Length: 346
Image 1 (cartoon, rainbow, N blue to C red):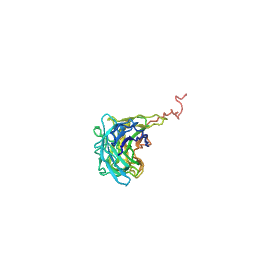
Image 2 (cartoon, rainbow, N blue to C red):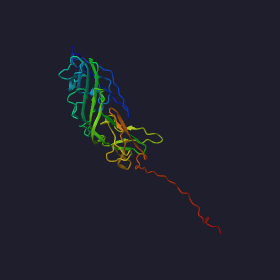
Image 3 (cartoon, rainbow, N blue to C red):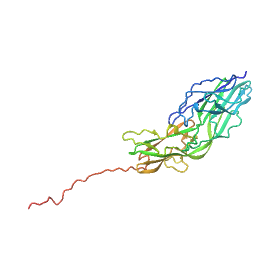
Image 4 (tube, helix red, strand yellow):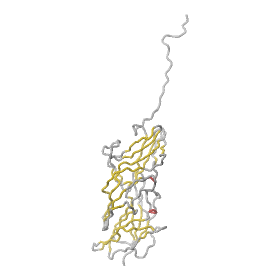
């Protein structure tokens, strides 16, 4: 009898600033047709929606899979098959239904989500390795083009079992912006741009360990955050209090970027052509349309599945050309007349 397989879908969540951590919850099994390879989802996912995908918003994924028998013969089961959520349920379906091969002892499955036009040149014959090209687009102010949270999963099953769980991971990095204000006046941030980040690359993995890696990264572009037309106000913190970094971009505005190492060969805070930097456009008091740059060390690595916060510190020492004008006064004392006292008594 060929063995029924249930594939499970989970999502490993990232949390925290400058570091990432993951969490995988227990599975919930749903009823499936007898002896058919089918799919399940897992619960307990984070509730953020706009840029971080949760299990409730995985509407479809593409799956590859192959099994191997005792004689080391490999048979492809899934070769880029789209599996879609059934409306109003946590059940996923595809057609035609698949079964394990006779005598199968081990199997490998890999999947990605969403089903996107940004995924190009996928592997065409799955035998234990997978790769595809991907482009991370730029958000636009109209809201008609949104970034995607690219999810990837892979698992090796030995021996084959009736239940196979796919734990999805985030394939991209995500960057937020924070700010502190030690000036006397409110700073209004009018624009934020991540300068010179590579936007295209190839991601690949193999069934030896299902460790994913990016390569062939190209096409540096600028990623502009979409802010309110009036800007984002950063209120001053009166001394001696220590300013606490606050989010300038909301949790829904984390910028998805390709995992990569930054470029800043001079390792300084001077922005040169080709450097990676956070460009900040701001107004403060009578100074308008000002620009400042935050540069990270050369080859600082944005890692897959991690999220980061770049902090902008508004104070005279961090922005040398920002000189706050203050006044200090003195009052001279009356001076005695050196010729004596008048009128003179005869």
